[in-house]
Length: 290
Length: 272
Image (cartoon, rainbow over all chains, first blue to last red; front, side):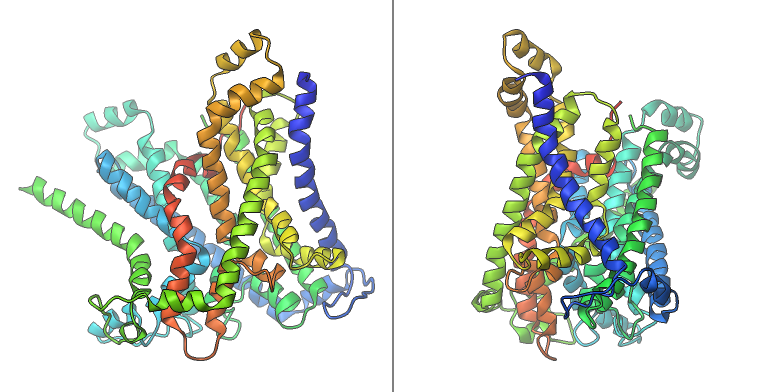
């Protein structure tokens, strides 16, 4: 076999399969969004951009857009801040063995299936039998309805996401910081720089590109919030935790089966994802990680 | 003295961080061994008589047993197929240079990041149209969108770590390109390639949304576990804890594999 043959034989099957499972759904999504397909009926009519104009006047859509924005803001900044804070607190404080054990513990939450994570916390959030309300009872608060109070529900769910991702980011950022070259930090320490200044002016600036790219990765991941929210609140109480993907699900599959309408919403999410991914790509190209 | 205090404080902080990560999982795990009367108490019980009833009861439910089998079939199918297709492609990415290689490489990764809702809605219509809705085939093909990019992505690094000298030596001995791949590169990269396979296994095993929408008879384990919440008013906490533990054991066992790939998965290096 020539080198050329190996090249095509090895690469083409994978690329063709990936093209198939990505291009067909994309074409079908655009196609659906221009029709008025409803799941119960086999036929549909071409209606152009009517779905999109209907979307513009849909208050439930605007609500879900707002919820999605809050969700993105809270989970991305929350997990990033937690990750950085923990990484700085643990920076060069542990021996290899302790670090290995703690690292494994910190990634368990994110390895857990999201459905499991949801139930694990639902058990603790329960107003009747949950541990949180038991401890809050000690200080005379509660019982707090973590998941059925519409001002609290979104944040209660977000905490679970931050629990999963913040701890993972802590591991990643800690590894980044500890694998930095020794000379600059040692020089600074000899000059009598305190820990806060050390991180503020020396270590953190060196990992900015990686943290920026992790931020975008988390932004994309946060768009994939359906499982967690669905299992915990189904978008409720009311529509107070209904993000874009939950609304798309409810409109397209759950309640009314207006799959064409749902397709419009999902296309918007796809555009957002592509935008974030392009940003990641730009970051990579600018600072190719050594 | 101050030094010792600092040391103690550090260990306290580490212990708290450890507890935050572990306690929620631990609490559900011990819940699965409790009688319901020990779960549903206003005061949390740490000491109780352990029992296996929850596991026995949960395995008596036909949906759970069926979903366990479905999950094993679908997840194994999707990750093996991803492995067979992905590993050779990764070899090409690692050893050949061609135009727009980095763009193609990034496109592969970006597929993994597609929002599931944008994938699942057109796939309903596609699988219904082909008469394949709610079958193993359709679910496995859909899951290739997760497993194939992951395997390619993680295997590139494995092949790059194979010393080029070994391959060149084999070439000098008169091995063909194909032989060099499967007699030299594949065995040396083998262990880490298996790691990549297990990584994609975890991600597909955990997946909920696609399976939830695209199946009814062929539902997978996360879907079956999630459907518990919807069976009436009384939440069967004992059964939930047991089914959640069954669902979580495989990924938790494989967590150390996951930890080896963290850096190359979340902060990948784009070559050249």
